[in-house]
Amino acid sequence: MLRATYDWMMRLAASPRADRALATVAFLESSVFPIPPDAMIVPMVLARPERVWRIVVIATVASVSGGLLGYAIGYFLYEAVGRWIIELYGLSEKAEQYRLAYAEWGLWIILIKGLTPIPYKLVTIASGLAAFDIWVFTLASIVTRGGRFSLVAALMRAFGSPIRRFVEERLTLVTTAFAAAIILGFVVLRYL
Image 1 (cartoon, rainbow, N blue to C red):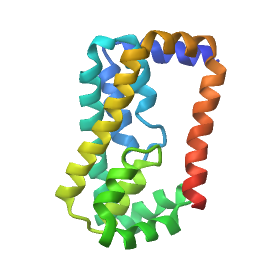
Image 2: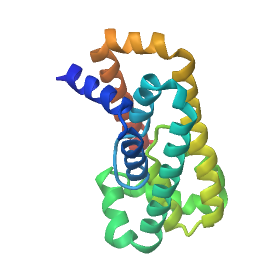
Image 3: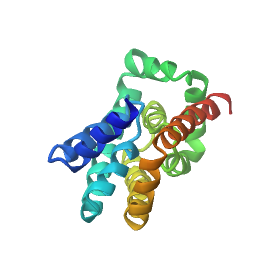
Image 4: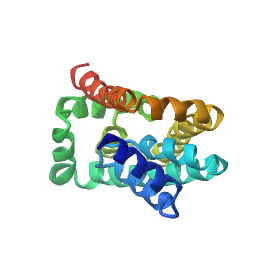
């Protein structure tokens, strides 16, 4: 099943629907979806390395647009929707800590958290909840999301063939490590 899923992702990454799929994942990940866009960026760059910067632009624009939706959830709908999303990830206490920290450290929180595997949706919703300056939020999101996606895509383009061979030969190990990293990110976020 794992091989079939990998093969499907690689076919999707090389297909004409890849850009729309990446945009959808990047948009939704910024406010509600748990899978990071890197899961689409990696196979897309491996499948079509000549499109690396187009892929980065699509992921960045969609992620920042989705981040604005997350901001709106925090700003306008925190009680109705935002709290539920935060509680779904078990991060209620962290959201309140974020809100309080934004008064002093908002820009730095966005810049640091936007680059890490820590769920970006927490940053977007907390930014809206704290009524953080939307223009600063947007510019910081462009820098951090664009920077992160550029780094991932550039590494895939530069080292794509050996990485692809490694992934294909050790698919179970790679997917297990990727899943463990995501779970570890949630655990660290939950208990730190």
